[in-house]
Image 1 (cartoon, rainbow, N blue to C red):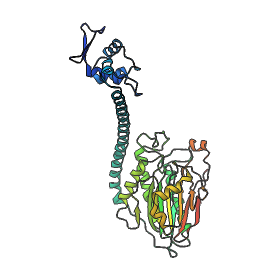
Image 2 (image 1 turned 60 degrees about the vertical axis):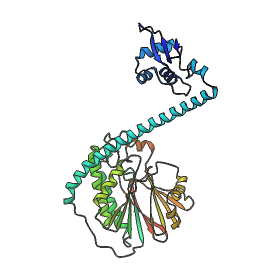
Image 3 (image 1 turned 60 degrees about the horizontal axis):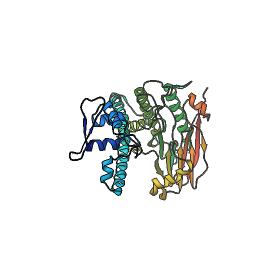
Image 4 (image 1 turned 120 degrees about the vertical axis):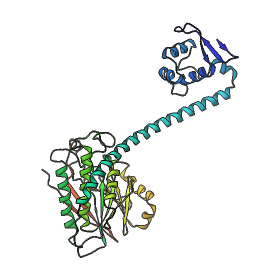
Length: 402
């Protein structure tokens, strides 16, 4: 029974001794929420929570009123009292509100997930900072007298896909550290025999670390076999990066970029922050504070781009390069992209006037890389970039792996 004067519905429910009275506004809202006309009806449990009713009461009420998910979102009284266009407009507004509400819920879940991830990174950063404070008094950087010779070139070096912290056959943190520093030392010594460069452009990151959180997974949550705790891996990787930068600084001014990869998208932020703090008083080292997924620098007439290589198509990269740094693009006549991700050594076809170099990896081979067939030789490459003529030479230092 509908009491029009009081806008109240009176219903007899099996579980209640007395007639059940429900305000008209409440019933209309409940019916609208239960209707699937906008494609996303609330469940009985959801309605019980929303309207503060017992689940049995909601079930009996819907049955007594003859209402299902397929029922119109309006009561019979509303249909009689309102114009057709008014009902249409009301339905469109309801659908719009639900779409916006769903979008807001998804955005809020994403914000919560990101906040939790950064909270864990902040905790790791705090612990590493405490270790750095104890390490600084013991740190003595090494310097070498400048070499004679040309100063109009730069060396581009990137130990991409290093996967520090991976535990695999013949590969752990100790082996990884020795392999990187020894290979880099031999490579720099050989590449500077004809004279020291003006600059070493050192691109770190790009899956430099094997994991990205306290759970020991990649950024997207894939579990990894690790050599140590996440905190110890991050800490020892920072020290390794510091020592590698010191080694490069023996030969020339060092410009450091940290490129995020699919294994270390969050921890690359941590590594960058730690290196910025460590080298902030050094005049022969600069750490780029850029967080972008794709990063660029210029040397003479050359534009140098660094992409990890896990997103987008290679054929689209030159257009992204031009769009993201139009001034640098216009100021240069030679353009290069240095990428990794696939652990393979290859010079890809030239796209327009952009040359793409895919660099090999120094890391060990886990079961996944073996299944994928990533069997390129283990090596580190230095690209010699002439100030006026672009890339004029490459120096390759392979590693013999049993």
